Length: 246
Image 1 (cartoon, rainbow, N blue to C red):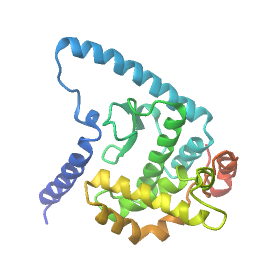
Image 2 (cartoon, one colour):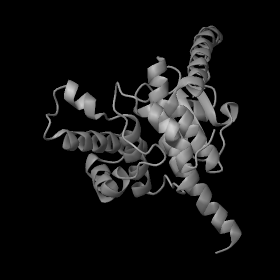
Image 3 (cartoon, one colour):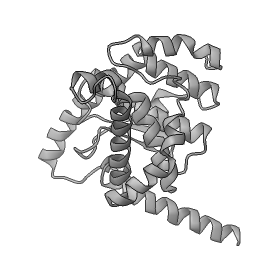
């Protein structure tokens, strides 16, 4: 196959994946046209949201052990983060709080739906897992199994909590582990459905194919984070033992 044909195939794959993201992240398509009055009003509202979002990101980078660990792991893996280049606050569809754009290697934080520092920390950590997988494990979002795996890892390391299952009375002492696995699988399935616009059955099949391997892959955090614990701090302090330095 000629280089020209290769370029055409890559372009078609990118166009297909970009189309899947375009509805969730309209900011990726450029500014939306509007009349002058609306443009002035929404510009000021969006600027306020953007500044708040950027401040929350900066706060996380300075103070969140989990975010600091992810940045150290990316740096040690040859993918150092420049905040102004690799993280962008944008207006998104109301159903999402963030995303990862592999074509320009950039994390999106949704300034209109990610409204608190806690939400920003959770979303930023989640998307940095995807960036880490893209950097270190050659993540290909056109591959359903790759997408399922990175969504499993992000849910496992950043969201689902053993303690959360107990406090919500979803788990007892003898089945906490299964409820945690179910939480991770459910979040991964819903993410695959949203990103690839596929049925629940297809998303479930992809998640099940890779679940055991990806659920047990705890890099670079090294543990599942329990809420109201020192796990994030411990993981950050242990990072140099595994070759991750600020």
